[in-house]
Picture 1 (tube, rainbow over the protein chains, first blue to last red):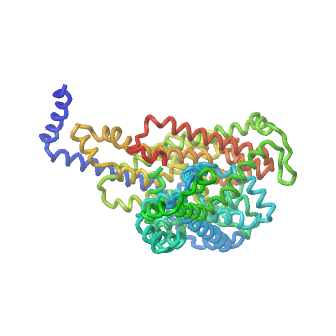
Picture 2 (picture 1 turned 90 degrees about the vertical axis):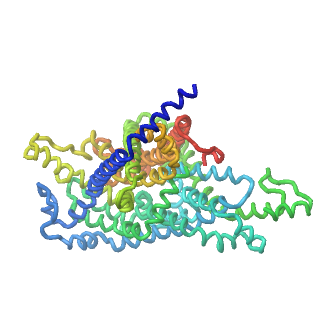
Length: 301
Length: 335
């Protein structure tokens, strides 16, 4: 029995040795070049829409509809940009509205979630685990289930067409971000806290002086996730914001869509591209926080 | 911890109070009190912005209710209305089709890319960044508009390229024409799927970090046993990263079922779900009932059905995966 199970192993090990390392290395080299080719072709396909977006945004109205397609506009129409962003569409105003919404939400969520996650991650209390399961359960909850009653309450308060219904709930935590931060807090060593407790510090002091400085990278990741989500958010403003002067950029862009093919695509692409620039810049500046947030969110399911 | 054990024998121990929610020792009690202090924002938020609205929308779903009139009890009427509403059934079908198509494809592409990038390759960081770039942007209104432009039947680049390649005067003159993409009911969901696949770099990052967590000793052992690369992938890689795949699958399904922004933006906000309701995603119809026709009762019923469907699907996915997902240690359970 024993000889039967070991013999194939021994044989294949012998094959690896006898086959020589040269052929193995050659095979690995081929795999590497095939992979590189696939990756490069894939990159061209995946970046193509963005390149076409830039190209369209610099064309004249005639060039946009030309067949065969014009790849590089004969004269780049830089004035498409001011034309798309001003006039009827006040993108300067929309931009500040978006910033108010995205930064306000980011501050609210980062602040409330660090507090709540500290409680769940590092303090002991009876019933804590049951409560945390409740936090996780709310992550699955579709936002539309709570939307209608919330809308009715906010309408009664006279908050429609302001950012209050969108900003105020952010100061009471968000399940997903609480979960991410709590995972991080659980990895910090307990010693600091115990030492501080013996020195007579209270938990608020510990959170502020010890935990917060140690968890700045994690808070950065959470803050960026929050910012990005609200920067793009369309559904929330669509429901609560009515007047054009309060629009964020997402609603402003949607205004461009004219029914029955009347859309000015060169202007639409110019404006769309401008709204994508801040996230791209932010990404290249703070790439590490982005990647951290995504990786943490996936791995510890 | 040392502090507690020193304190406990010194004073008479109280009994835990309030169903054990208030612990006995003084120090434990203080810590529990601080716990409640720290989580108080979440507790208030949960009561005000989650629990109350859920209960209220359950109640509304049994009433005839529009913003300006008080709710009036109608029993199951809203649910019966929905069961007879062909557009509602269409919205379920559209959402299901989209979810089944886009989520598995997204995972397959993300995983493939992660495997390709999990090798010693030059400019790895650059590849990773550039492949992630679309994921960073997708979900925005700008990208929905970009794709509605790419998919434009007459002037969109996709159909122009198809004409150039296989059109009447094309490279290979087969006289073929591109589909009408977002304007052809049969092509709408595949088009939305292509749009969602564009952001598959997000999944890639998650899978890449999972792949890097697989111990290399396992691959070495498999290689000595004579396993080919493909066998290694299916017998070592897939089982080891299966928890991450399951997690991505579940969040992907929950996300896909709530597709809204792109569908709203692309149908221009004028005729929601056009053409022929083929892009009437579940939440789009919910929105239309709630905020276009002010049928708040019916919309609440729709929201509740969605909640129950998502709940059942999640449980079913966990249940079905028990046999296929490998957890290295189960000390912490699901969390």
